[in-house]
Picture 1 (tube, rainbow, N blue to C red):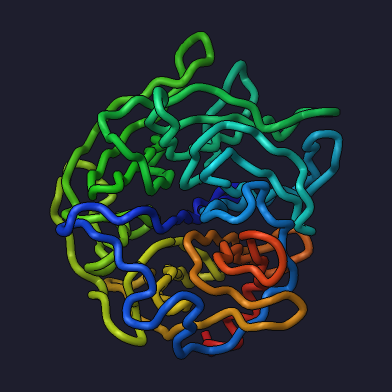
Picture 2: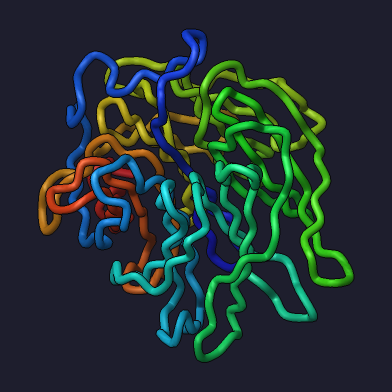
Amino acid sequence: MTFKPAKILAGVSLAALMLTACATREVDFQGEGEGFVGPGAPVQAVLETPSVGTAGQDAADDPAVWASAAPVMVMGQATQGFVAGTDKKSGLYIYGFDGRILQFLPEGLLNNVDLIEGLNIDGRPQLVLGASDRTPGKTGISLYLFDPAGTGQNAVRPWGAIATDVIEPYGFCFARRGAEIHAVLVGHEGELRQFVLSVDAAGQPVSREVRRAEIGTISEGCAADEATNALYINEENVGLWRYGLDPASGAARTLVQPIAKDVLVADAEGLTTLTDGDKRYLIASSQGDSTFPVWRIDGAAPQYKGRFKIVDGVVDGVTGTDGLAAASGAVGPFPEGLVVIQDDVNDVGTQNFKYVDWRDIRRALGL
């Protein structure tokens, strides 16, 4: 997910795990093989992060992006915001907009991460980060805080958790409904849980479950669009669903895009939204052919606008991606928006995250 002040730009995203029962089997790179890249408008990434610390494994998973109008301090470093990225074997990275590691939190088996503004603690506005957590003994949603007004060694810090009955938390995204902050958890077996998050008098997190539904089979990526009351979820081997963001809508949904060659290929993984002027877009990760389909979503129904792929350039291209996130407007050195994408097969070292200038994607697709 992505967040800029006064805008929720979700994102969130996603990972391929082990094979499960036949009904929920995850199909990696369906019909082509690892590293296959399907047709799409070519775009180059402009920089990349270092490899995550867990070498030789499927580890880097999902990013989130936050941009600040004024510089903030992270571990003694001034930055205009940051990118959070999970290593699902060991914890959470915080990166600068130049790709450097600013902080690492050894928090365990975190899968998807997202962030949102809108909560005050002791009268101070806080940025809240949440991550689906598969660590034995603490499965649920792990929560973190960042104080934008903090100084010195100011850092992202653990805040608490949202407990859940989901055995393997998988996808996660924040959403806003009016004044409420909602946390949406997607389980590996297709469970959907939605919570309202608030703060008690002691400054501790309080959650209230407001929806539970069953998606059907293995699912992960989710992203919200408050303006159209929409919650988008990728059911990895079925397609892209649009639910109501209002929890009262229950399990009602519409299939936006079924799994289909050269559009959205299993595994369908990450999802993020991006606002560009008066237009809003949804970007998905078509992991099976390493491409990224885009829909315009500010109208009555989503409109498919084409696909792009990340090819070799200053840094290597992207193959087999899991998660992605986007932020619009001025994002550090990116004047009109940034898209961050996990790269499964990196040219040097293990998995990492690529930074892509939104202007390059917009130009490639003629948006």
